[in-house]
Image 1 (cartoon, rainbow, N blue to C red):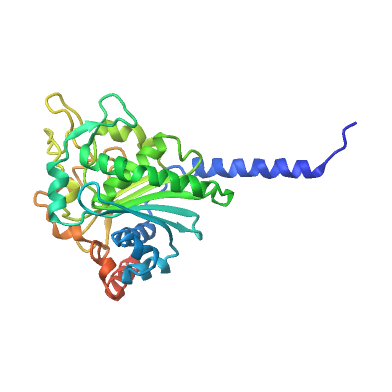
Image 2 (spheres, one colour; image 1 turned 45 degrees about the vertical axis):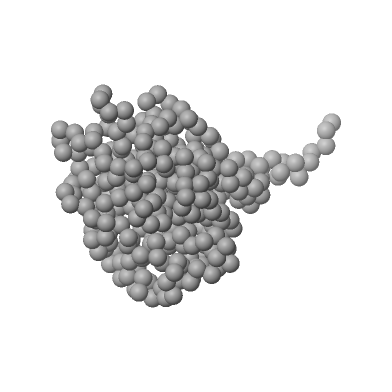
Length: 333
């Protein structure tokens, strides 16, 4: 008769619990609710991601470094590329207290790059994950595919080899152009089943349109959360322009134009002071009762989110003004 070995039973039991925990993480999280505190934390990470990688890793980005450190984020990788003629950065962080891995991208560097983003943003096929009628905008897509894709996969593969990260969620974030990069990174990894059994979450700020509705429909259901934060009249979320429909909104599809730039749900639409917000349609990325209702968007609101001047914050000596704005906002909730 075989001898009973309790150690084997406990080992199998432990293995079963691990599998159940991962399953609960993936399924139980479901569609995670919008978390304003997390959103503010990620905005600071997005601001820090505009710092040069060498300085970022040396924790030498002034106010931005201090703001991110006090929120528990630790950078473990940063890279830069110049394929477009402008420096672009990707940074990865861990927050062990929340079991999070953050993938963040820098935003637009200057007005000339902003012009290039939209002049050169012609429709193209989504060839890494092709689908019927799926189109993306070339500038954003090729920036991600040619500049950051390999580094991102290699870094995540390396960290996932350690079992202690088995239950960590992966969050993608960025402001402006960085938000477009975050969408491409998230879409690529979930469609590749690279994040199977992991919660995958996206928070973007002032993000432009990236592709058509068919592009988003490929991957949006595989995410545990997708929130697109818009500050009042910020013009960038309205670029490239959508095609208007008969109801003064944005058309999702048509016959004469090969691509209809369209947003994914869900938009989180803030007022001018960013003291209150509206959670827009959970099914339609273009909600005519939210930022699409504006007739005169402006560039001013694009520069500042939650009191943080995002593109310049890594150069700022003091974080005091920004922290006061955030504390006031959180106390009002």
